[in-house]
Image (tube, rainbow, N blue to C red; front, side, top):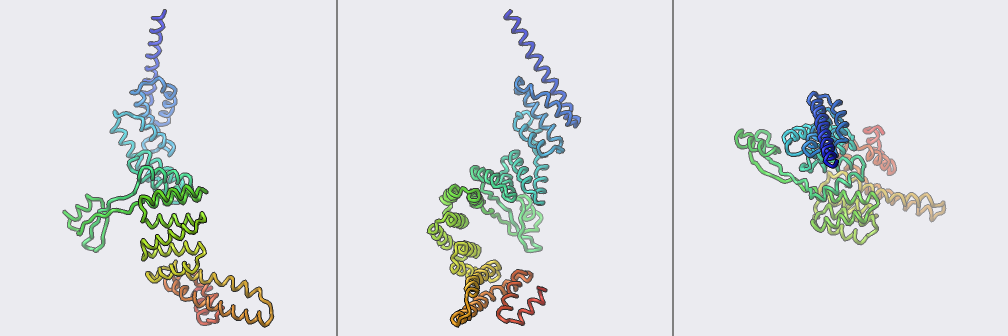
Amino acid sequence: MKKQFIIALGLMVSMSTMAQKKELRTLEKAVKNNNYAEAKVAVSQLEPMLGSMDDKLKSKYYFSKAQAYYANGAGTNADFKMAINDLAKVDEKYVSEVAVIKQGLQNELLTKANSLYTTGKYSEASILFDMLYTLVPEDQVYLYYAAVSAVSAQDLNGALDFYLKLRDIGYTGIETQYIATNKETGEEEAFDKATRDLYVGKLKTHIKPREVETESKTAEITKNIALIYNSLGESEKGLEAIKIARQEDPSNVELILTEANMQYKLGNKEAYTSLIKEAIKNDPNNKDLLYNLGVLSSEAGETEQAKKYYNKVLELDPTYINAATNIAALILSEEVSIIEEMNSLGSSAADNKRYDELKRKRVEIYNEAIPYLEGVLKIDDDNIDVAKTLKGIYSAIGEDAKYKAIVAKYKI
């Protein structure tokens, strides 16, 4: 009796294997004939058999299933995701075939992801870039693109997840660019190494070959992690991320400024001031840094310090429009308290005297702001907001000729 049971069990196993092989042949035939709908039906028939399937048949099943969902490039994004997951379960027997499918998937996903990003569909683009990273994990730049897309989509939680992964895998984004100067135009151009060497060596169309490395994205990634934590109400985690990054790169001005801004938002004024001084000490003639320090000082209510930074920017670069615009705005903001006091005065002799004093002070403020505003218009002739501001000022101080010129030119 025991012997009969063993024989019966062996027969059941054999029949099960035969059924699996039969369904696999059906799946393979459907794939071969490009009948992917039928192939998916065969997949559903095979799924309940996976538990008893041996490794060899499982590999064949996952490979054929991946082909069915890839559908020779015609699958949906969800189908592609399924195919990517299944390809990871295929053994080395199908190495070359898997490589072909992966390349096709990569081409399809990259084309779609780039198109979605350029048309402003950032959330969808982020999903596809993440799929690309899953498909080709050695191309870590795809994970970076997923993070950037998620930020653009305002998906802060998704972006944070991507940036944390980038930090954990040590992604820097540093690439080598192969540069050569075009003999005809005199301009430098970037190529892959083989093309650059061909143009310089054999074709002789380019000279002065050199190699440069792009800047590391490590500071940017850490900064974004900190800013996202801050936006999500987890400022302490953000500050900790910045401090860890600064231990590795203590002189990185971008990280210093990010920590300074976060310290200010946390109400740590002393730490903020110390970091600002550290930043300017590291790079005293960096106009962008000085501009950022001006913005931070302005946000902190340190108006005079902000003016000094903006004026320093304009000394280094008189065409720095944002600095000129911001310093003019700071000057004009002083008008608010003057107007409030003027409106609160009565009609007594003392009040009239005070009114005249405030009126003169208001004109002084206007005269101080005018050169900055006029400087902006010289560079940015289409700046209607600045033109309107100047129109109001000219009217208030009796500059009739300049007032009429603004009205005539901008039809405002």
